[in-house]
Image (tube, rainbow, N blue to C red):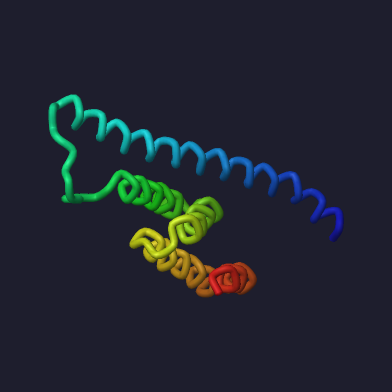
Length: 129
């Protein structure tokens, strides 16, 4: 048993490192897109609105992060999707994207329950509580 656990530890470290790399790239890409949109408006001579008339760069970036997490979920990369959902909930609490991330996290826990993976479901529920 201890041998099996020690064999899994390097894999877990690799998964966490890969998740951190993907999250960093996703965050950088989302912020870069928002900055390019702002620069494009500036180059076109459009004045910055005095009152917000649409989504802010921050909300667009959060939306892109949620979309990336959703794509991980669709690809069945549940670990990566969950980590991004939890990051959205923690780093951007009280935003619409955080609420959607929480809903999707509950859906993943329910999936685990439905196939009898109670430990995984319980871990998710406990992390949400």
